[in-house]
Structure formats: structure tokens, C-alpha cells
Length: 266
Image (cartoon, rainbow, N blue to C red; front, side, top):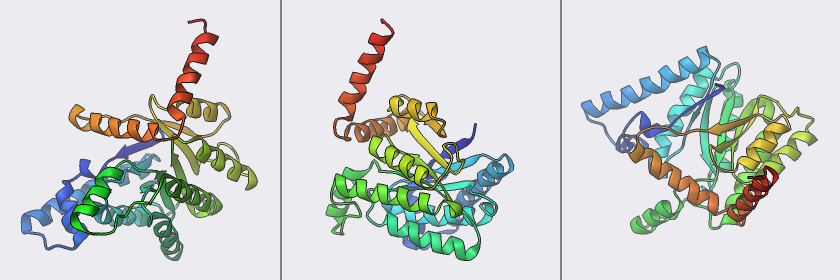
């Protein structure tokens, strides 16, 4: 198994991340709680490096993400000294993430460690926009699907163009973004199986992308979420909604399935 994954809120309460993100004072019990979160990150990151397994840490809501980002960056500084082991996640529907990536690149080069990032589009759009409107601040989300796509593809291009300093996990059900990465790799003369570049789709979704990439020798992982049903089902529903938001993709997948059934005489 080349990759392991966890959600930040699997290691600590959202509220404790939120308080740390805001710079709020912590009570003695809350400080102990946060220290335990830090220890969990460190223990898993250490085990990942010892076993040469890439560790992907998911992103969550913007109002708790600052604390998670800073903690993952600490793990990168400590464990990504020889190559990327610890990966953060950049949800590119956030309009600030491309600039964040470029700034983190400068910091990593200055301090001598490698970056690892999983790129996703994101799955909390309505929730984020509603909260911003309710609390009266500017939404952190991109203004349109096209802006999100441009942001995502810009990050793919930036990372592949700077692949000597970082590794990329392209978490996408979007064919165009996959084609873009393939073209960029070819232009740079990178091998299809360059271990610094991975593609990933959820198990049971966009299999035509996964299987065709794997057939051509690219590194592909099928993302298998697991956990309590009450947590996993909302996660999968959000990803299904995100997947159907790609124009025409659901009907395309259905047509491909029908074509394959016909080929197999099922």
C-alpha cells in the first residue's frame, strides 16, 4: 500500500482546530487536547517515513484549516527532508490556494525540505458560501466553476513545472485536468510512472479515468474511505455531488458502462 490518508477531524475536534486557527486562548484541558492532536500527527508521520508510505492529510472547512495547515507544514519540515512523505491537501475552489502553494514553495526551498500536495477541487462550496453570507465576510470560494478549474489547472501546471522540489497527487474526476497533467509530463520528458506524480479517483467513481491511466503506466490510486457509517456516508454523498457537477460527465460514465456491458455481451 503506497499511500495512507486521514482527515484532520479524525485526530481532533473541529472546535479545537477552530480555536487554534483563530489564535484564541486555550484552557489547560484544551491545551492538553491540542498537544494530543500534535502527537497523533507526529506519530503517524513518523510511521509513514519509517515504512516509506506517502501520507495524505485531507483538508476541511476554511475556519479550522489554518491550524491544520500549520501542523502539516511542521510535519513536512520534519519528515520531508529526503523526499515528500507528508502531503497536505489544497482545495482549489479556494481562491487563495494557488498563492498559498507558491508561498509555501519559497519557504520550503529556503528551509531545505520537500513539499507534497494533493490537489482537489473541494466539496464544501454551499456550506462555505452560506457561512460567509451569514457572518458577513467575503467568501473564500472562487466565483465560478471555470475559475475553480483555472485555479486547479494552474496548480497542476505549477507543481509539475517545479517537480524537483515537490510531489503531486492529482485527486480529480475531471478528464481535462488529467489530460493537462499528461501533456505537461510529456513536455518535461517525465516518465509515465514518475513516482513524484500520482493520479487518484474515489473507488467506484470515474473508473474510466483510473483504468486508462493505469493501462498507460501512470501511477494511479483508488481512494477508499472507511470509518463509521454516519461519517462516511455524508463524505461519499458530497463527492458524488461534486462528481456530477462536472458538465456531462455523469451521462458520459453511463454511456461508457453501457458500451462495456455490450462489449462483454452482458
